[in-house]
Length: 130
Image 1 (cartoon, helix red, strand yellow):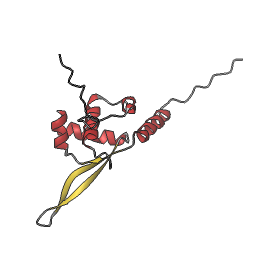
Image 2 (cartoon, one colour):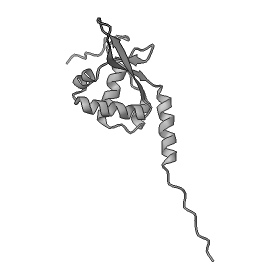
Image 3 (cartoon, one colour):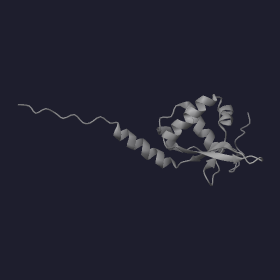
């Protein structure tokens, strides 16, 4: 059996996910959408413009599910989403695709840790014994 990975180019067809993504408590669907956005991103600007339909097709999820996961990833501060506008040949302004910006992972980690501290129950006070 031949090992097909021995001649892997350093500029090959793969991408990296930050280790911290696995402590964010993402379910597999959210992780899949996040990984696809990382796959599509421009490494210099950290932005990408895939349509929800393209993400849906690539991940095997419905468009509604993808849209839900995108909102949840934005809530966790992993991505920033901005609508874009397109001008047609006739001069009409229409909605374009969404512009996704991958946020630095440390921002999401800090937000996650801060949120964990907020939801911790207050410490119980012990009653004094008489």
